[in-house]
Image (cartoon, rainbow, N blue to C red; front, side, top):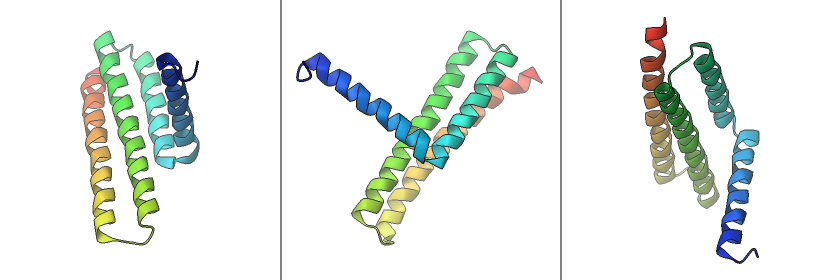
Length: 119
């Protein structure tokens, strides 16, 4: 059964869930982002945001956490390949962190668009 198309998808989903739990358990940056996501979700209920605002907020939370997870993966691979400092590895890690910055910036802008009018 596990060698069938559906079985392989189920196994893949299991690996994805395992990876999500590993990130949440071991990575401070993901823990911070998850905490912010929870706070924003509570704020969404408190301010009774619209369906469209929920969609944008959930998208922003998912975007930041996904990119943060990819950044963690890039950093782990880079450190595995070249544990000592190397200029090129530093560049790769900085670019991955820059992607997180862009995602977080978009999330902050979405949050401002949603919540500033509520004050």
